[in-house]
Amino acid sequence: MDIQATITYIMEIIGTIAFAASGAMVGIRKRMDIFGVCVLGFVTAVGGGMVRDIILGITPPNVFRNTDYAFVAVITSLIVFGVVYIKKDVLNGSLKNVYDRVMLIMDTIGLAIFTVVGVNIGIQQGFVEKIFLLTFVGTITGVGGGLMRDVMAGEPPYIFVKHIYASASVIGAIVCVYIYRSFGAVASMVVSSAVILFIRYLAAHYHWNLPHIDFD
Image (cartoon, rainbow, N blue to C red; front, side):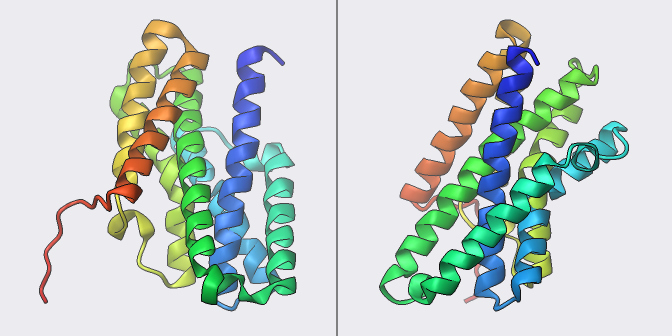
């Protein structure tokens, strides 16, 4: 495994843990049983990647060819379930702010990592000149799992209502493509991940949201 493949794999595992944890926490808050929590964690972690692979013609999707990601997602979900089972007040009371902060961090890390991994895989498939395609697959990899999570949990999709989320993924994907063309894969993944993390931090800190119509 070369350095680029190693870095990509490590980033995917970190992103899988982050998204699985956020999915599991949503499932717990929705009072799902342990199976539902694991399913939600799994879908959040690998859902976007499955859609990306289908779009790029990678069949069966990578999650079914390399079970590391499924295993990590399920184990992470079980650990989160166990922690909350032991300490039930983590989702309310004085720890509610801790829960919200952890969710924000997990979602942001997962978004950054999976966006750049999605772009990178699209480039590996030979589409380096197709900026719209690369931006789309990068964004769907980043936000697809969270979108499935929210729909399955009966929540308004986070990417449509909260802070700058999908927009940060789009910007990061575009940055990733152009930096790749000049400096290569590793630099593009590191820099564009940092860009997404920075945008998400500013959006959360300053409560940035895209314009919407308020009927109240």
